[in-house]
Amino acid sequence: MNYKKILIPIGVAVLFYAGWSSSQWMGVAFVGSGLVMWALLYITRMIKTMLRAANRPVGFVDSAVMLNAKLKAGDNLMHVIAMTRSLGKLQTPFHEQPEVFTWTDGTQSVVTCTFVDGLLKEWQLVRPTPEPDGTSSETQQVSLGS
Image 1 (cartoon, rainbow, N blue to C red):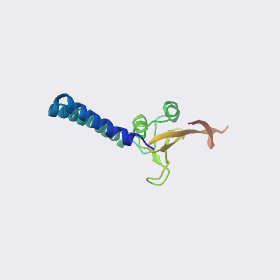
Image 2: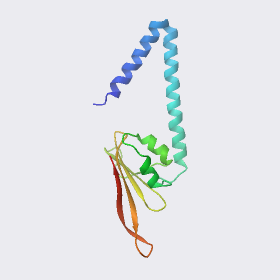
Image 3: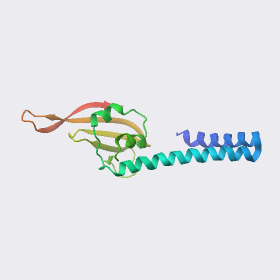
Image 4: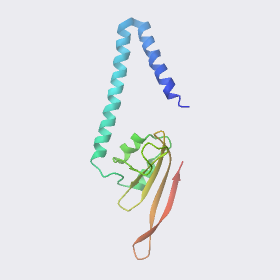
C-alpha cells in the first residue's frame, strides 16, 4: 500500500488545523500560501526539466556509463530525465507496469531502466564488445543495478 496517498493529505490537514489554532484565518492563509509556493516550485522544476529534454533526441544520453554510475534505486522518473536531459525511449506499452525506458549514447552503450509506479527499481548497462577489426557486433552486459 502506498502510504503517501494517505499521509500527505493528513499532513496538510494537520498543517491547516495548526494554522487555524494559532491565528484563525491568518494562520490558514499562511499555510495555504506556503503550500501554493511549494506547488509552484515543483511545477517550475518539472517544466524546466521538460524544456531541457525537449531539445534533445528521445533516448539519447551523453554517456551511458556515467548515467549507470549515477543511478540509485528509488530515483523517480523525473529525476532520471533531469540527469539525462532527455526523455527515455519507452520499451513497454503505454501505462503498463513496470515501465521500461532505454537511453543510448554515441558508442551504442545502452542503459535500460525499469520503473515501478514511477520509481527506479532496477537498471542495466549493456556495452558493445569490440571485435579485432574495430567493429562491434555483439553486446556484453556490464552491470546490473537493483
